[in-house]
Structure formats: structure tokens, C-alpha cells
Image (tube, rainbow, N blue to C red; front, side, top):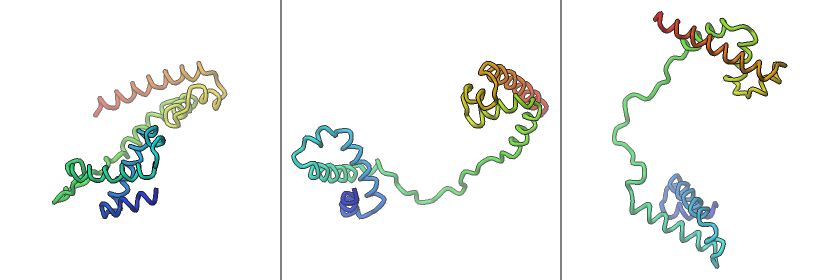
Length: 149
């Protein structure tokens, strides 16, 4: 691989483009592995794919990312989620201990019904019913909170 990378650099004279080119070549070789394996000289075959891929990229400059003359003034900033956390904390406070544990294990820790039941020492049916009741309560409380705004 390093040999291909150096060869790609010698062709395009940019290490980043060379890495992209090698990635493209590896994908092409993988997709046609039977042909590569059946070739008399697989290394020469790979070198040919590398060279033709580079030539193909040079013919189609619109496929590559082009730098912009002027960068945008503002980048994306994540919205303030502190209010969401406070609201979630308030909503979870309305749940009983078991319901809260079920909701946190199922939806925050992404545990299955069976895993949640095992961790809490309850039946899977209890996990399902507690989840259903807790989600209904959370939806109702969330709806009433939103309608007050």
C-alpha cells in the first residue's frame, strides 16, 4: 500500500489526493478481485489501475471538490440544548423510579427489552408495560408544557 501511495504522490504531487487515489484503486481492485487474482502480474495490474484512475480523475476535474474563493462568514453553531435538558429532567422527575429506570435503560442506554428486564430483575412484559405507560405520561406532560408556551 505504501508503494502505491508513493506512486500516487509522484503522479499527482499531493499527499491528500494520493491517499484518495489509493482508496479509489483499492475499491476498484476489490470489486474486480477475480480478474486481479487471475492476472499474470497482479502488481502490474494494480499499477495500471492506479495510473488510469489518476488520468481519469484529471479528465474530470468537476468530480473533485473545488476550493471556494471566499469562505462563508458564519459557520454552523449547535443550538443551545440546556433548556431541553432542563425540560427532560423535569419530565423524568414525574415518573416513578421503576418507570424512569426502564426509560433510561431502554432509550438512553439503548438496551433491549430482555436486557432491561434482566438488569432490573423484572419480566420482559413488565418492561414493555412500564415503557408504554411512561412514554404516554411523558407525551402528555410534554404536550401540556408545549401548549403553555
